[in-house]
Length: 297
Length: 323
Image (cartoon, rainbow over the protein chains, first blue to last red):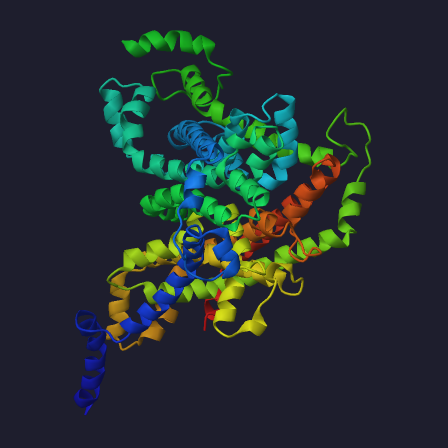
């Protein structure tokens, strides 16, 4: 009696495991949902890209059609303009400067917090961590006054330094557990071999924490590349020539200025997406890993 | 040898050596403090000057009538705050921020969790699917916003698509209709940030051990029971973090609104940050009062949420809300 009752249950229990190896009938539904989400995510972007291949007259005649004929004029127009390349240059310069500043200052401060015992260490850490609660919008106006007073408004440095400052909290929060996880035995061994604390930092700490540094670097770069509010206040309001505005500012400006030329706006917008897309897809694991890592650390 | 040489001058140059705790290391406390100052100093100076000081200054400016030029002279107490909190436009903006916040948690959360649960299996092509879902998040908010502005304009792609499908009566000036503009904005934000939420949940699901599923399956649990009884409770920390990020993001919403509607039509999509930049440039005192209000609201929400989340009440409410 008992055995006959348990047999079907046991069979049912075993089935999902077997199924995974054979054909899973749940799979088509999963693919359907995945397909819907993927199409919803990508279709608007595809519309912009494909629209860039259309002439403005063609778009005005039929906003939802395919290019007829395919025209490269808009893309060529953007790719031969100085303002597009000026924007790419500025975004790259500011992005690299911000990344470098963030990683260097961040790892140094995180090293102290992670590996030194001193009075005020907990306070130092809480101070940086509290920075997470200080959004840029709150600081924006006084920051632009401050930059104006010290003569940095309208300069790249005036954009890079505050971006580094606002990137430090996340950087330090990610890096401290990373640096702390490096076993103390390694440090003791290094000290026995005659290394100073600084030598240990350079020769052992930095190489071992490379993955963490890449993560925070990617985050800093990406945030800088996409930033809008601070460039708006520092570059646009500070009198930087339009040709040297960062990409988000430049795209916004271009689309207002040439709003009648839809084809050109679409081409400009899609070309502005490309660098970020390429970079992000290459670093996807780092970005998500960094965010979830920060969350758990 | 080397450190004997360097330790000498370092001791005398060390800033404020503390008499506390006998030094365990051979190098004296002076050297230790010098190292601490050299390593943490630059970050600390930059952080205090460009993050802490501006926030504190916002608090000071908010008490003055000041246009950003000349000396701070016209102290007006709390007048800026009174003006802000009695301006219907600003109150609408606060309301809009909270509408987006609540809708994000209640709609995007369950959606992202469900999709992540479905995708959390061995699928051929999974990495491609993940990468494509991530695309909207990858774009700058400004560029995504401008794209949607083009798509949603009266002669844009969305209306043209509706016409082509024979749904001509649903065509709209999407972002210019005050009755629906906020929800259109919310939809754009969902498009932009759902992929991130899904990926975060999928990353969280990786931390749920496979053996637990197998054990439950052997005990006769079905797929649904496994998800609600085992997976979701174990995913709770990730969900809590996502809710936190989503709430803070909703309260500070700026770029997307600024490039698509500038808060219009008639304030329908206005947010605190948009209002701040619109009215703050030129009226630094008033703008700073707005900034302080925005800061206090964000902080209050964060603190209240942390109390809730620590007691795990909210996580339970959210996960059971998926049903």
